[in-house]
Image 1 (tube, one colour):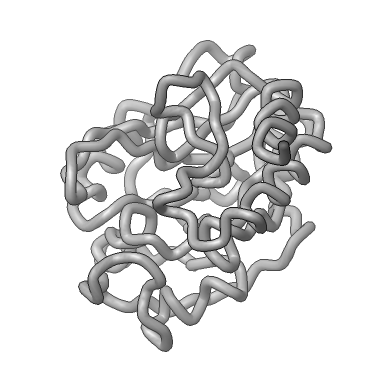
Image 2: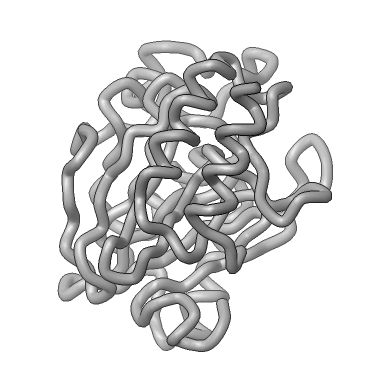
Length: 228
């Protein structure tokens, strides 16, 4: 990402350009812990090589990933998970509302019925769960709307938010709310934006758009503008 003071030590974005229906840039994120790395989202099938290359440049191997946290089950976040698990013995965690989509009990909400290989979920997360990291506690914040159990990750010690798809940064605005065309429950998603606005946030990483030097004030404006 950028220099340490800008993002809090221990959090590394892994941006890559992929083909997923169209060419897009995605931003999985690696978080350092005492046990190794937590990977936030994987990307679609084919993303694992890019993750491996990024981690090597940081002095890590793919095998250092011990936990994968999925913000939600969409294919551009979870599609490469089975590939990753062939290479590493990692624990998989996602919100309990997302688990059935990841395990194959339910078909993904979006997409044309074409699904990625199902993967077992080891830990079902709930709002408020905290995972210890070298960047301080990483808190699960339930931000449903874009997906039923979508969650974002918040680092209160660094005022850093990993938004998943609850916010996006790949449009004309530096930071914007979720895209309506990909968000089944927009009302719920905007309530989630308002919830994020109540946190002390100085900077945000979006899966679509990467690192943004914006925070609570901009998020509040998004929530208020959409509420009008």
